[in-house]
Length: 83
Image (cartoon, rainbow, N blue to C red):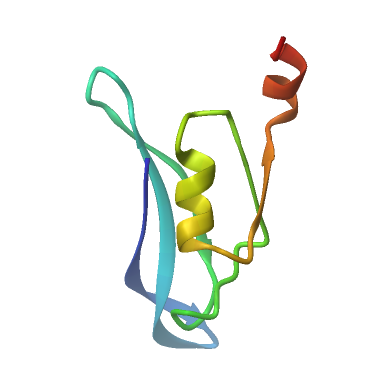
């Protein structure tokens, strides 16, 4: 999964360049899929309060490294399926 941003011209009354943050996944067969995108205003203003993910090894640690203030929790479906 890739999390990155790009600047696009956004019209909110007047047009200005704003960052759009994109989550992109790559399937095993190489096809890419946009998982979501978000507008936060100026770069650096965006705060990720919580991440809800599966239990992919290393994902929680990677999130905490980039977003130390964010909370992390296991997806409810994955928590229910866990032995």
